[in-house]
Length: 480
Image (cartoon, rainbow, N blue to C red; front, side, top):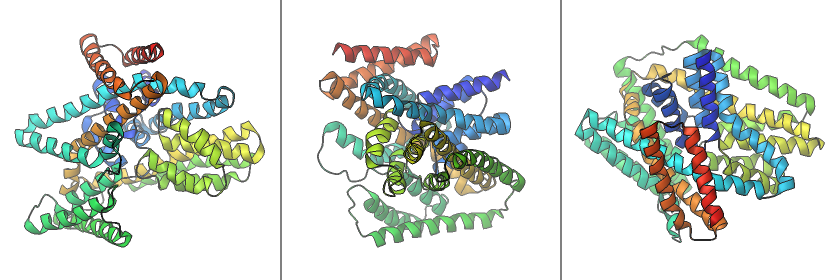
């Protein structure tokens, strides 16, 4: 029982510092669960990351739900998902109420505090990248060089937007691919080739990969939608063909527990059903919101920012909430708070739909709860379904390659998140400090190095390190 409570406390704490996007929390989760509490293994979490990366929904929520299921069964699965997503969603609803009185004051406090939090996250991200390189080096020098090359290539393909923003470059970057696009390209190469790099396979990967990059890059060097879609479909079919051929060679058969799959799906459906009934009892129109909320979660590939576009199409354009409520209240709040954008946005949208319909804040809260549960139920339910299938696919060489190279790929993307955090902090310093955003970069670097030294030398709790960072960053901005 003590271990279980400690586990949930850790997940809630991680949920409170979840700035920088879902991928940024991977090293934080690993540090807490593997190194500190020794509840799970790095290999298991790697598998969680792979499955969460190829399924829609809130990535960190899916990962901790899987860890909770392995360590503590059904109760661990449900409570871990809730504790990860709840802090951000709860404060989202609270802030929407307070903002009507305090206007931008509360937002400014959180934005200033985020500078200190960002320094700590940068330390964790850099440490994760260094650990990946160190692990590869232990295997062989060749693997280390390949891993570093892969990280650099991934970083170059995703960093364009942040590089342009930091250096104030006008124009559109050539690539700046999303997480989903990078993973789609990587999985295509691994599944199709099966590590067989003959002339035919390499030629196909180079040609299709080049068209994919030029068509999906921000500059859209290839703008013909039919060509891009045809290439994406062909890549998908070739990847499936590669897995099929690998399965024939290995004589693969599904070995998962079908009862377990249906049981886990039923658990999330029941949880969703309970909150849906409560919302419908408050207002019959809730069923439309919940249906659209579940659909939006299933469509939520591409990260948090991509989900904001999906929510706009489903809820704003249909008139369920006003454009002012969405862009002046919900979007600014979810962008400065920690946690999954999917979970926070659905909770915020639910609140305003309930409030707009009845004029009652209580109904708004009930709708918000239904939206919150919809986000985690759809995310985790779909994740568990694919996870069970993935277990039986691990005997295939194509999926072994994913397990082998997913960490360097993630590390390359995390290097871009470091730039993203730095860019956000530059904006905060420019607004609240009244000086050039470049001033914040040495502060972030110094704080990150100080965090590394303090934690290594004195093994100080991460909570106290965070409090110190927030106070120091806030104090510096106040003096400026």
